[in-house]
Image (cartoon, rainbow over all chains, first blue to last red):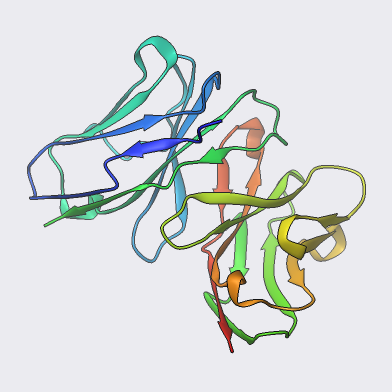
Amino acid sequence: EAGVTQFPSHSVIEKGQTVTLRCDPISGHDNLYWYRRVMGKEIKFLLHFVKESKQDESGMPNNRFLAERTGGTYSTLKVQPAELEDSGVYFCASSLGQTLWEEQYFGPGTRLTVT
Amino acid sequence: AQSVTQLGSHVSVSEGALVLLRCNYSSSVPPYLFWYVQYPNQGLQLLLKYTTGATLVKGINGFEAEFKKSETSFHLTKPSAHMSDAAEYFCAVRGIQGAQKLVFGQGTRLTINP
């Protein structure tokens, strides 16, 4: 069974540009999560999809970030326009159900560098 | 207040020595506690989790953790370190105010000395 995949693995963009990150969850997983780790800080939650609906977007830092999950399969996270403080590693995770003890399976992350 | 605190951003031990990575949580959080590990160039992998029941939890690769409610701790241990254990380790909690999200500690990078 394929794991969670993320694309690209690395992205270097200039301040003001737009970047789109993609996450493909494990097949059949209705729950998809985005997290971010800024350099030197802890991993922080961004948002949670259940199928195509946003269940919790309390962690989205501002309106420069737009997440979508059309059709309830893969998800994209767009940053527009990118700022220096957006640099970090963006992780995607998925899970089958929503029980609190259920494992979230993580992808390898996308390292975003904004210069 | 920080929900999860990992004491020590870097820990270094000799191969064969005891590994102890510390995690304390806020007493207000529910007891859904997790340890994840991130090996270089890989995603986070679940090591073990505590939900209910036995307070000593065994995980993969010889790791275990003990849930101590009185100390609000969930420390990760391994009796004998191996070079392949070098990685970054994250303690996390889930279920704060019923939310699905994981709340992570700051991470501890474990180095194994030959």
